Length: 298
Image (cartoon, rainbow, N blue to C red; front, top):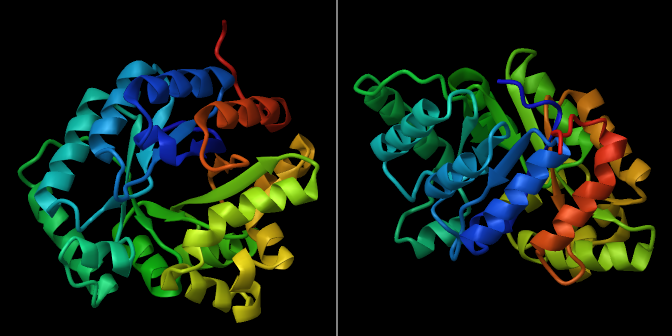
């Protein structure tokens, strides 16, 4: 699967009206980005269905789920959906699977209890289901932040997808995964040289994540403390998690992740007042020349 080194992660690819998401996907592909990543959350579309719609609207770009929630469908349904997309679009679909977060899982009526054990059992069930399905070679990526889930990604998957992490985490994740597993971190970006504007957009984005134990515990292991989480995030935290500045400054952060061991970095452009696909495409267009992408011919 040739996806280059840079892709795009954006919540509206799976929540905006389908025609708007397809239009954005076509433009992002034209700019030369190698992948699109779709999330799953309350109010979003169904990620496997949305992946199929975006794959059908484009011709080269890969689409990944970042992530499909294991509590939202049983293992056989997940394996069958991934297999169908892999068969329809060979070499263009990546299945990212994750355990989500306790409040979201509880709202579905499940017991979050032991997420690592739940993931291990789910992978067992997926593998069992796969015996009855065509072999389509879809890469399986686990959402992983901390050592034990990263170890499981090394043992039972093709790699890991990390979210809300600085390059220091990427280096640590690569040590755990070893040299032969994919490592695909997400990186929030704001293309502006105005510190106040950049940090305001970043704090609006971070607000919800800084209430979730999975992220807070991971950030504590990276040396951040409760003072960094207060008030929407300290400048130190904001600047570590969100790359902002002119295109060259933003692209330097991408290179930092790649130098730390990432195979592919997925950019999430942040809007001044929240997610905005049109603004995201403008930021991606500004970054493209600095990223040395392979644009499609007009």
